[in-house]
Amino acid sequence: MIHRANSLSSTTEAFNAECAKLRSIFSRLDYPMSVIDSAIKKFLFLNSSANKAERNNDDSSTVRISLPFKDQVAANAVRKRLRDLSHKIGPTLQPVFVSKKLGQDLRPKEIKPSIVNKQCVVYNFSCDLCDADYVGYTARHLHQRIAEHKNSAIGRHFLEAHGNNNLLRESQFTVLRKCQSKFDCLVFEMLFIKKLKPNLNIQTDSIRAKLFV
Image (cartoon, rainbow, N blue to C red; front, top):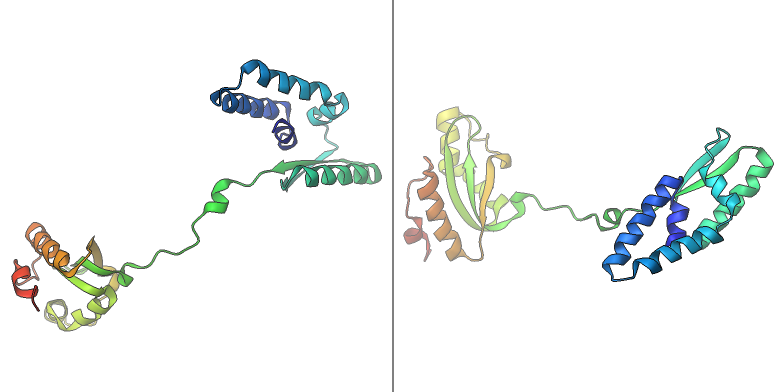
């Protein structure tokens, strides 16, 4: 791990910072600090002074190339080839290996479904042209229920208040709660109606009317 920290570090300060992280990690694993420091000192001793001077050199003739770190064998091969190439072209080519972030591999690939694809939900409709609203539920997919609302109290509202019942859009709907069953939907629909008091709902106790339909 010390060798890898050295390969990933382009300056002495960066290497010291990596060593500090290694000290912190291994001390939490109950490794004696003397053993940790001894391993780092041994690596520094075995590392040739020529390589250390090359790492600390900030000469303008040095060209640093950022490359993804695959493994130590590949890193050594790349470093050797760049050194051979440097002898031929003049400027010193120095690789700077960059490790991939863990979040890049664990980034979610699946696109979350739109709210209209959800089912067994209690939902709220809010008209974007006025203050009219409505609370309902559906055990099917929400997009199916939205399409039916063109001929319901919501559709009548658009026709009477705004002269067009084709103004209904999916963006006017939000999911208030995801439920497990039709009975849950009825219960939470009733509770949300009593809490929000939507002006397009006719009944406030829909559970009695819908439970056995």
